[in-house]
Length: 139
Image 1: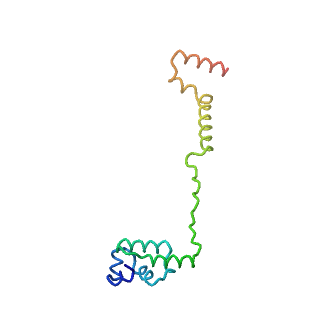
Image 2: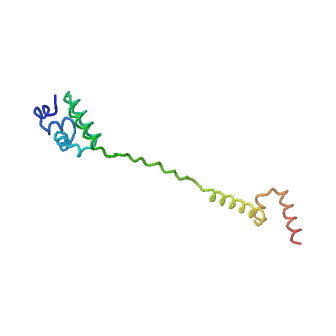
Image 3: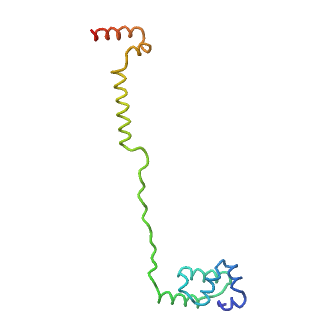
């Protein structure tokens, strides 16, 4: 069964509904207007028509193959390289800043903090030694 025989039995619209190939693509295929179709689509449409209508469209396939060999344009596929992922998370400068801030806070707490505020935290035996040290230092 050839494409012409399929068209005699069915309309372009019914073929389009059965195969889900658009009518414009079918009309281009029937007319042999292969320049309106890409190579992959043409051979895909021919395969679909052969499968759905149990037809042998080898003549149409040969005609399309000859056309694309004579009129081959370099159809190239461009593949983009993946972009390197940016590192997400906390930067090392921020980590260093936090460590310095913590170190400064600890230093300030132990050297500059009012020792009288610590009296509530120290046990009574150690409190007397801290107060004695402060009196000796101030004299």
